[in-house]
Image 1 (cartoon, helix red, strand yellow):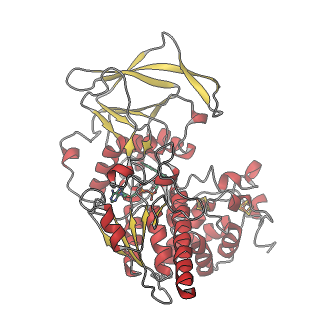
Image 2 (cartoon, rainbow, N blue to C red; image 1 turned 90 degrees about the vertical axis):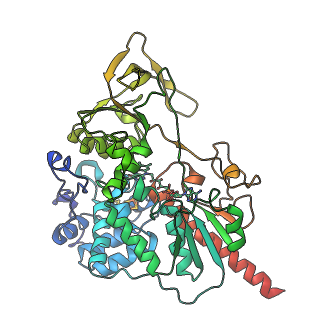
Image 3 (tube, rainbow, N blue to C red; image 1 turned 90 degrees about the horizontal axis):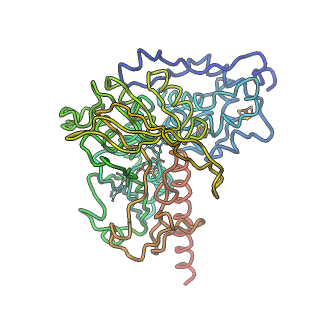
Length: 477
Ligand code: FAD
Ligand code: SF4
Ligand code: SF4
């Protein structure tokens, strides 16, 4: 092992080539190239094969990182793919969009002074290579089982559960109100982070494995939830969280102030070639406008960078805390700054100016106070610090809350937590309704793709355990 690995001492960290900011402003293509084979092997060989790999400990999927790095360094890519896909349903997606600086790479022991192993880029490279070589085969259960599972929501949680359940032989149908599969992977996250083809090929792959999809099916709307409970032996709710947090203050209802997800869905649909009247009418189009985005999470970062690509005149991000205390990935802030976004840290909107449409945002400067009960520093407005930012498009990206599912699904017995998320038994993933399970953001609150995959996989395992127990009980009767 020694001569092939541990090369971090002499071999510097090298990330895949990133396109120049001026070039990437012109289109919605991904900004990072894939590794060349030699570079992937070299970079994987920087791993020191830790006895206790903190990278894996801090990966929500407990990926077997040192082992697949070693296999990559040795050029044994098919084996690396098998190992990597054993714990992660969508490694090429996580390799692209996980905030690695906070998870695996941020905890790599060689980070200090030598810079971490480029784990995400290698993970992406392994599975992209597997697809290119036709090593990725559709799910093929050893035998079929009669029980059927209905899954509401085709985001990463629903899809990861579908793959696991189908591989065990269950009859799986995924329902989604959208016309394409992928949830936020397809309609939330822009293609400069995750190209749409990557998501679409996983849809095809699941269909080839026997997962059925029923699209444009709004459960609780056009299709009653009770119908699903009658049709399936178990139902998994994986609907994500979509209720956008609102902003108050004078002028908050002016035309030209829009919701982040409306803006992003429109842009993603345009990238997919759909008709997008709200884009062409200018309602959800940043071209030629002074744009202000309010918020500091992933959604806000995606909005500012989308606006840049739509040829906005200027793009300003207002965030009430500072750079160190923002929830979004710092890597994405750096990318946004390179692309020309202005960040107004420690600034919050007070009111919105304009008569028929928004023309500006009146903002105040904030300072960070003492930590509150949650340990987070409070923010306080600085008297007399108000200033105006010109704006003819304001995008609200303040986060999401869950929809009120007991009402939406007409299931008053469905129990919620204090945050409005679905309450589940943490071991069985079952909700308060027998045979109804839940996973992903609708349980956890707005989180990450990698956590949704983890929850979907765990929920599938729990559903399988419950079916097995029922079968055993039946056999004992
Ligand atoms: P979702 O992906 O939200 O999928 C839920 C699905 O359920 C949707 O397809 C929806 O149409 C469907 N649905 C909802 N209600 C119904 C209904 N009643 N009937 C039928 N179908 C229904 N995470 C990262 O790790 N990295 C990132 O870079 C990143 N960027 C993000 C950018 C944006 C703009 C946003 C909003 C989120 C981002 N996230 C990111 C978070 C990540 O996308 C989510 O945590 C993850 O997608 C949650 O997965 P999920 O399967 O629980 O829900
Ligand atoms: Fe890192 Fe995410 Fe891959 Fe885990 S899944 S190894 S956190 S990139
Ligand atoms: Fe390799 Fe870093 Fe993980 Fe250690 S922490 S096993 S060096 S990737």
